[in-house]
Image 1 (cartoon, rainbow, N blue to C red):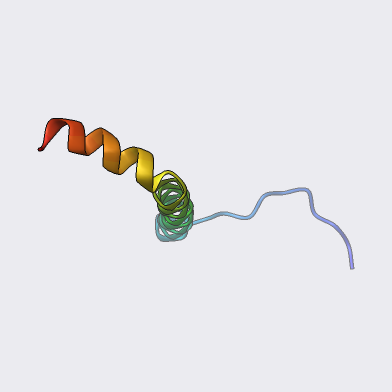
Image 2: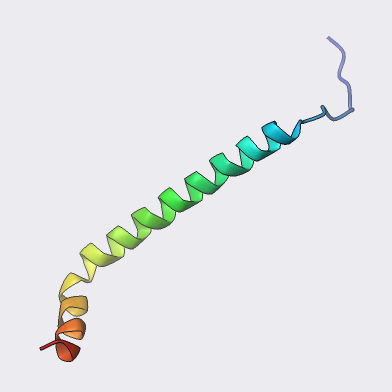
Length: 54
């Protein structure tokens, strides 16, 4: 099987699908990081909010 150095053409739909999938993965990762930060520092966040809304 020979190797061809030529890059395969990707249609607009394929590029858009790949970009959308990458975006969803990044957003999922950011949401997970935010949840972990909220859970780990919950008491500090609660105290900070309670200083303004009491």
